[in-house]
Amino acid sequence: MKEYGYLVKCAIDMMKFSYAPYSHFKVGAALLAKNGKVYGGCNIENVAYTPSNCAERTAFFRAIAEGVREFEAIAVVGGKDGVVTEYCAPCGLCRQTMTEFCDPDEFKIIMAASETDYKVYTLAELLPLAFHAEF
Ligand code: THU
Image 1: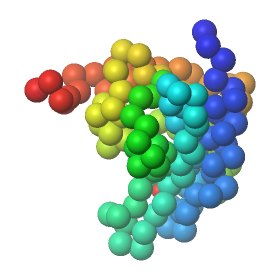
Image 2: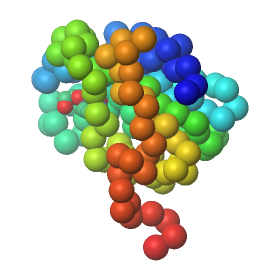
Image 3: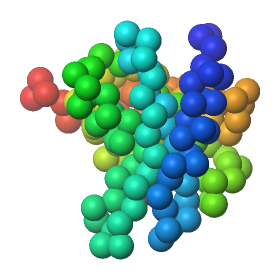
Image 4: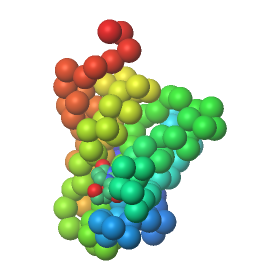
């Protein structure tokens, strides 16, 4: 299996930029584009709650706003007050956003507890029967 420790490290580094004064749950993401570039993301909360954005979608939107649309993998880490104790699963909205831009059988989602302790899933495994553009 491919080694994704370096991508997990980028996600862990991104947690320090998390703006989470309401949930105190800090999330970091690192999105690897097929061109080799890595786009970092963090969660950004809002006092009105609904405008909040997850770390994964922050990473995707940064890449897409730079004209990059082909992706290989995303690493995700999260924990209360930035302390990672277990694997952090992407929410349903983020899985749907990934479906817009990624091949569900190829794109990898890496849920990590540390640089050496992580699980790798395909997008198809995490969002089966997805609503996609072919419909
Ligand atoms: N969050 C993410 O950033 N990504 C996920 O995949 C799960 C949830 C954020 C949203 C909110 O700021 C905080 O975690 C608690 O739900």
